[in-house]
Image (cartoon, rainbow, N blue to C red; front, side, top):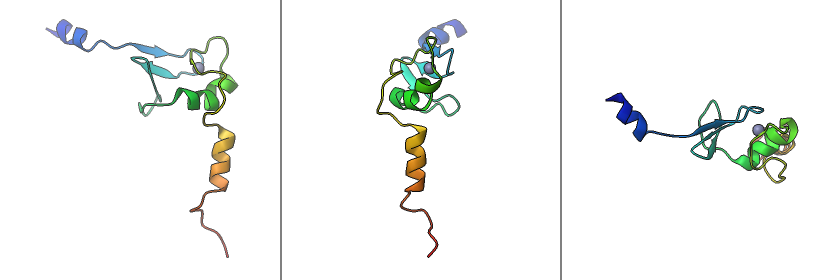
Length: 85
Ligand SMILES: [Zn+2]
């Protein structure tokens, strides 16, 4: 019956009450895409700025991940960016 199938597919899903970030079976996934994410990038992009005591990201407060500042820099330094000559 359905009950048995459900028990085979047991997975834990934890959502950060502050950032809305999701962990499935202990792996951080980007909400929306469901792709596997980096907790460190999440910290740099979201949790370090917006997280508070509610944030459950284990990497919160860690430096070294992706940040918006870094992303903007990457954009402006993009090697394939078309340039006027
Ligand atoms: Zn968080």
